[in-house]
Image 1 (tube, rainbow, N blue to C red):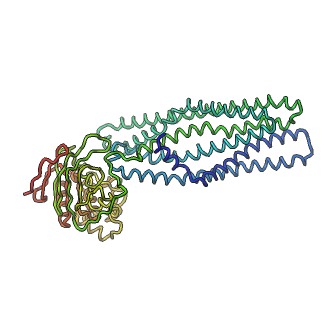
Image 2: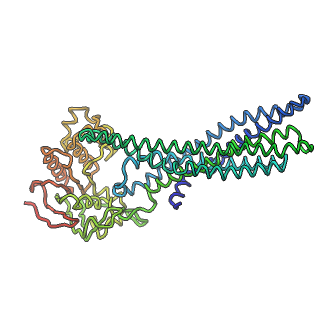
Image 3: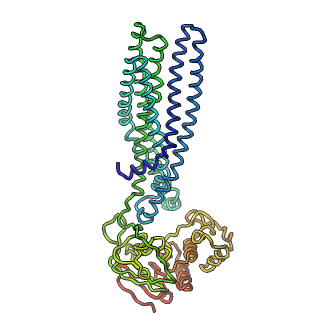
Length: 561
């Protein structure tokens, strides 16, 4: 088990005072259950001898008290245990989010969104069982088993030794059977659950494309097969748990038989009475009911560790090479006006790859320039954009007004250099909320003004204004409108340097020229620097320079006419 997995498991445990409170209440409930059976056996057997009722009063009160105590403490244990476990889930998710933030977006490029969602939801939820189904049952069972063995030993040493032997055998045999019958299935449940979630998410998101290309039946078949595999693993796990419970019950019966084997001769010799024999014979049934949680706890441990391993893989403590991270000496970056951005001998590679995607880039973006960056697919244009906003680490030099970006705080760099991505993310909310994301203090008048600047004021007025819904991931707006909303957000954020990555990728040909022209015109009005990344050509009058990128290298630059 790696140190990262151990750290996650420690984080899943509630604070000691909450955990031990739940364990203490669970032990009291289990002790009442064992005492209830023992007191009931003694009371019924002793009552058969028809003693004076006065001699039975204390046992009658004890039976009632233990019966009430079992339910009462069980309720409190469930309440305290689940409250403590649920309180830890936000801390686990916050920790996971905090570790995912430095990875995004380039450090998680190889993960399917459905799989990441499963790790954030299902696998984190599984960690609550670390305390509920592993730690609490093991500690409670150990305490009750030890107390019961001691009590039985005091009544009849041979019976106490037999009970101890059967408990040890039950722990070993139950664990072996559980591992053999359910171990593989328990380890498969989490990955199969993630596979099903990813398949369903892909199907729902891409149902229109799948339908258009007659691929929907195949996608549905993949989801159905994933569901069947998950169902099979869950059934195999359930069968293993049932078999484990059967083995434990069989050994519980064996403990009762051994109690009678040792107890009957002791009654004949007068060492113990009939009521004590009943206690010795029936007490193992209650003890094994509690102790039966031990093999099941080991099964739950396998599931918990499998989920912890998946979480650790999704957000490793050590970031992969290529993902930038703020060092302890990172300093604030303060810029007045529009800065100069200079790249000297800059190279970069995608995380998890060995070959550089950019080689020895030398480039200067002067204040107010409008630079067009072109090149074929895979030339490294998006990688260059990600280097500028510190999504991607680099070798060589990238400086803003002489300050190396790797020496500055990433958040400060991203306040200076903003990125309008190829597929801008729009939240499933109204237009107002999608714009306030850039500057939450903006007034409605400021939002309408920026919509006017990007050419969306009339479109919004024809609908519900700022209350216009954009749909999940912008499903209710066109590609051009999504790009204009992204540009409006960039203007609200007031980035001095703006990198626009393929603004016409999802825009029809008729609207593409207008989108590009509006982006460059709007940026020029504010005097900000623009690096426009585009496959398509741009009229020379709109730009100051053109740069071509090929195979990760700048091939040439020419001044626009």
